[in-house]
Image 1 (cartoon, one colour):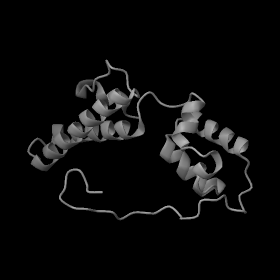
Image 2: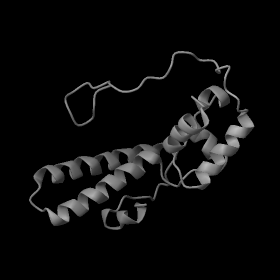
Image 3: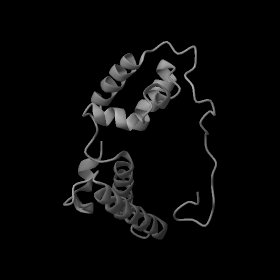
Image 4: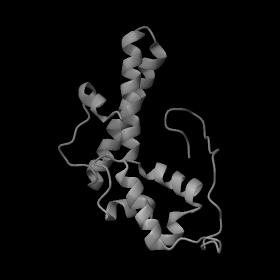
Length: 151
């Protein structure tokens, strides 16, 4: 898939293994993994951080093989999902840091362009999530109070 704000077709990155069955060396049961996921979600970790911790610490290669659904769906079923999706949260954090940078470096045109692109991505994602029902219809991105979302 082409990158949104470039003319390149970058596809590099890690790929999932082709094997679609549970590994025989996996020693955790689905209920145990669900408890681990709930514990990590209560600590404030998002779905991608939980997946990395499960892979690196607990040796669970893929949650989808255990539950037949995505990790974010498991978190949502346990009512531990954050109010905003992870991708919007990361874009809001990026926008806040860019705004802080632009306050001190007001002649940085590249940063201003990057801020413009980031906020347009936020607006497009907001429109999509409102349409699919993941965000409430009255939610609106406000750059002035976006610093509230920073951890």
